[in-house]
View 1 (cartoon, rainbow, N blue to C red):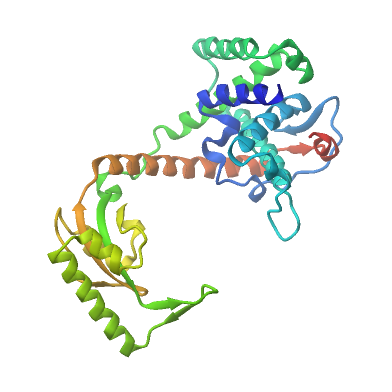
View 2 (cartoon, one colour):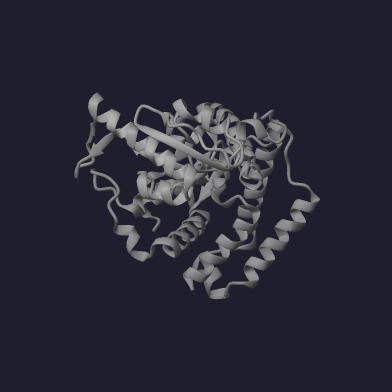
Length: 334
């Protein structure tokens, strides 16, 4: 029953697109910013307070249950005892800390909603009531009692996630991102890469001498000839170091020394032998602008730029935020 309950939480919050505030939090660590955390005894079932907004033991358990179900669905139940570092930290400890950080994130974003004129409107509240009704329709009374869930608690979880998403959108929607077809263009190449080094069993590189490099370049010239007169893909796969020589990529995915020449190619063109610090390259351009991949790259860059801008503001908020955690109560939650 616990897994079913957690799966419902995941499904509903995933529909909102804001599960635990992960929409930008994945690469943000609140411990980079927060200096005023302290172990403080908090009243009742409050395990933490963030800018005046409480995190209760009950809602923390809801988020933890959802996280457990999601992780076990990917890695299995044995993942929790996996040691993640030299200090002996268990994966379960790492994930629990992550949930607390993400809860702090949602609370802190919501605490700044008024400053940006963001609030829940009538349509939001209708949606939230629907999410809440659907949630309780999907669990038993026994499950609700086990987790001490009330309509007020569940509705609050949905309200805060919806509000946090609206704050993010309000702040970033009109941010002037630098994403267009020119700087996000994705091309599809067949690439032959002939390395300038060998690698031993320990992964250590040994670069060829100047004399040896002459022979390696001659090999690269031979590979280019094979790509020109035969099947470019088969020639690159047989002679290069790339396991999969067909690659769709942008300029930032290539070494700086070769990217300009590669992206100057048009459909069906074959490059000369190009040289970087570590390898010789030959590019055969199958498509100089993969429209779908370029569109995805533009969207990815928009998201990245928006996240970067929002994280800058979030860092400023957290510098002045009062964040109090009852570590004893938090440690007791399992």
